[in-house]
Length: 236
Image 1 (spheres, rainbow, N blue to C red):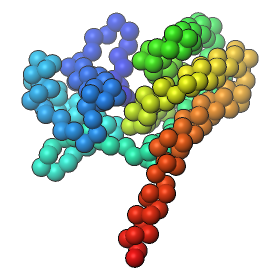
Image 2 (image 1 turned 180 degrees about the horizontal axis):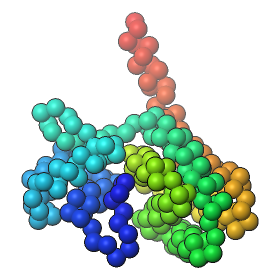
Image 3 (image 1 turned 90 degrees about the vertical axis):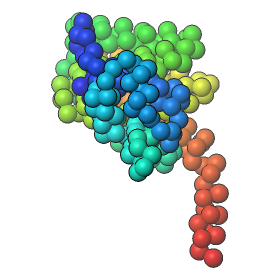
Image 4 (image 1 turned 60 degrees about the vertical axis):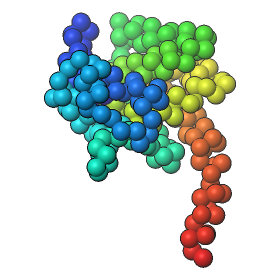
């Protein structure tokens, strides 16, 4: 999340190791929404003192993965489908901007690196490797964000991607989703080769709308009637 992606060959700091570990635990649902995170348990599991664990928890709280819950201490944050939909919309437009900026600047070896990342995404989709797909997509989007040459924009993209990432884990289980996203990113790469930043941005918006459509279909619309009835009952 943020500065937590060290350069190639650079060792992870203790804080970064804790952030990486807890992020994986949360996104894999081994740490569930509203579950308490014990500092002492994390220290024992990773074999380190409390200081880096506390700093890592502050970073995760800033990025929306955990929150303070009174006497319970730190718990895993629960992002509602409606909140996730809003995050998808904002994040989608931000990464659309990053795509346009990167498209205008990217060339040569950098384009070859992007092609390789898109290739990894295709391999994961063809193998129905959900975890590999999520990792490859995150790596590709981080790469594009960094090549937008706007550190603030790249940081915002990292921060906003994580709170709704649990829903991405569901999305890859929907038949056809990985294929559609991969096809969009292959088109984005081709648009980069042609310096067609508008086409690249439009294809990235399509990826955003795919995610939002699945959120609405599976998490928001099925419960809209129930919530409406609850509100009506409160008014009686």
